[in-house]
Length: 185
Image (cartoon, rainbow, N blue to C red):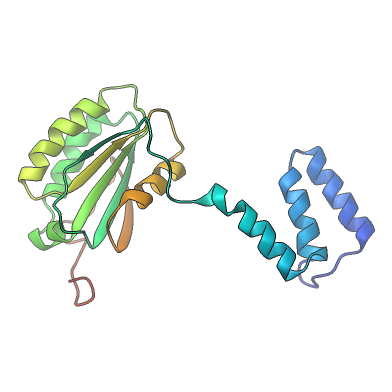
């Protein structure tokens, strides 16, 4: 069906019924648009759905602590954190080993997805130290648990960098992992 771009209406109705029976109602609507709708129909459908996919997520009931300098970063490293208190020190120690140039062009955006452990306290205290060692960071704590993808999108929405990287608090990069070329500087 996809290769030819055609499907007979009986087969489409059968596929839609299967999708609806299995709680894929939205997918059933899209199936009809893909095979029977015009480009205008698809455009208007996507335009209507756009609001559900915005990267700018509301931050009400969220805590934000900014440890960044005024100058925007070139690279934003988004870190989703959940119950990561025991890994924070090692992770930030690794970031502090970044080259001075890497530190100068980067910011770390921590999105704490309402960790029930003491991640907040440990991370805020450790970020105070890291700031003195050249690490720019932004800490956001949401009021409820989020998926890692939603946390990443939240981080993307509030980051300043032109380039993005994603890390977990149990991952590490080499001190020269963020290199400045003529394009980044």
